[in-house]
Image (cartoon, rainbow, N blue to C red; front, side):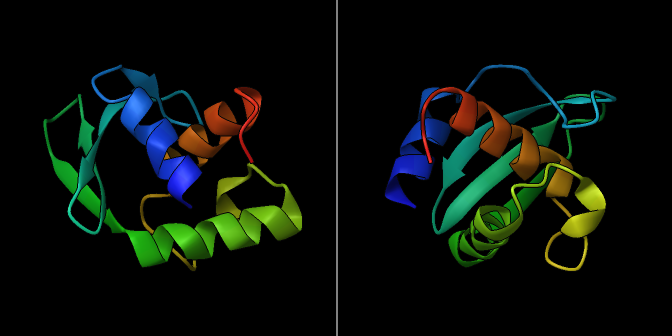
Length: 93
């Protein structure tokens, strides 16, 4: 988990596409988790560290980047899956 949060810190301020590529967002570390800023409307969404851990656990079991496999866990699925994909690609995980 710490390694994933360190990765998130390393991409703070970078425009990232959602996993589906339909939108763009920024990620920032926030107390107890992360905050996503949607660039289309400047809205903010928070995701707790506990929820991130739950999503990471499911990803470890499934290896899936398909959003529907996580909708029961989070409304931030498009953002967290993009981060996980970049994290894995960078050699993390």
